[in-house]
Amino acid sequence: YSSSYVTETSNWFRKHRTMKISCITLATLAISSSSVDSFAPGKNTNNSFRRQISQKVISSGEVETSYPAAARIINTPKFNEVCDTVGVTLTRFMDELSIQNPESRELTSLFGAVATACKAISNTVKRSQLPKSNTLGYEGAVNIQGEDQKKLDVITNDILKRALRFTGKLGVLASEEEDKPVDLAGKISEEILYDQGDMFVAVFDPLDGSSNVDAGIPTGTIIGIYEHDGECVIDFDCMPECEEDEIVCMANTLQPGDKLVAAAYCLYSSSTFFVLTLGDGTYGFTLDENLGEFILSHPKIQMPETSSIYSMNESKSWQWDEPLQKVVDGWRRGTGKSGKTFTSRYIGSMVGDVHRTLLYGGVFGYPADQSSPNGKLRLLYEGSPMSYIIEQAGGLSTTGTQRVMEIVPSDVHQRIPIVMGSKNDVQEIIDAYAEAGTK
Image (cartoon, one colour):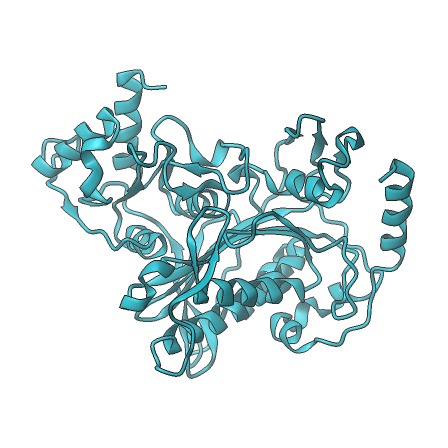
């Protein structure tokens, strides 16, 4: 493609972004009454916290990205009056948040879609054990990580992707089940009304722990939201080896965790939980199935700074880095800095383990070992969003030598070692690495 062709095409898209809606049901469920006006054709909200991201893709395929410091303050709502019957719903929480923070109004519809998708996924997971559900077993395909895709992986990925698309707020999405980032803003669809206001980038793991779902183990959905920059600078010299939309998607997607606008996870377990942060604390909601609403059940979660629980796969502990081995051994013996004897609690599902760690305190980790020298968890859509949630609750998240939130992804599916949890306990691990001089 020539530069003039792309410029002409982009201008055409900007003039014709309002399109016919023929698939409105899911979008309607996702939109709260206070945010309907943000979908008005031609409306362009002046977002005071929008960051101008300067990005350039060079011919080698590497992405040079400059991130100015974020200048946004989110004030979470305070509820002086609460309904005795219902409590505070997620819808009311987001509505009042948008009233106090007009610049964040467009997130209301986006999280309405996420909540709707989580309800649908929760119901799908619960019904998966029924003989006629046809959702168990493998799809017969392999994802980009070389992992066999289960039917539920594909189904839940499609549910979340469609829910987000129909908000008209999404520019790019990246998923564990997608080989490459998917450009949504630049594609014509007669089914979706695209808003000319702010667009976002969504990164997600649609069903974390899906390998254990047949055994009834808790599973979850992880999602992170970034701002979308529709003005990425592209070096056309690399054409045709690199496709235009792929480069734009990569430039928008490969952002460090400290540029997240919001992060959330849904846990499908004894109840369905929805936990989120928008940069001013971490809040937990529980699904009331009679009402069909998420109800605020854990306002402003604050993790204990010191704990006596760790959650790691100890079968490979002899392969861990020596500093980590020494700290965990001290916890077992009660000779660590806290003087407490730790207990091991490990589910094997990141969302389940992190949720318990968030509420009770403790340390969750998936360290590097000989079979996974770069760790196992994905930075972009697992490590960064969960680290944001943990840090906003007063915890820490690290690779041992680096804060997870500061790592700029080099690839959509990049893996990292990770340890997160109670502040003092994670700091003990950081100090051990520093003392050992590990790099």
